[in-house]
Image: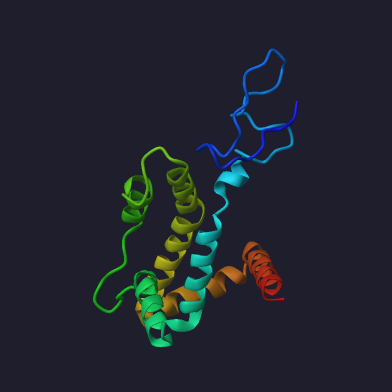
Length: 181
């Protein structure tokens, strides 16, 4: 009942024993505690492979590629990302309407239909994008003409002079103070 012994005479590297009636394991099955046939043994590189890898590391140190080539390669990978972060052309191109923003969130090709990404995109559009764009577009509309700005300021002053307007102005000032501190 001993483990098979290595032998150079056969291809398997294990000595062949005659079959007996005792319960010894066949030669192809490794004995208990042996690492032969384990995943770690099969996956580990042989000695010539280790030597080849070590010599390749010595011949090609990590800094053998010139810095200029590495920088160009990095710039090539970052170029599409940077192009996507470019601000819009506000001088020549108008901003999208609220309907276009909603249509893009609900039906655009940026993600598949009925996916988690689509649900999150629609939620973001409803809770953040559309309210912020609405307020921003009205503010831009007021600021487009000096007459609109003067009328808006006069209306704001008249509203603040009323009790509900003063209360709303007080709340707005408290909110602004809380955000800034």
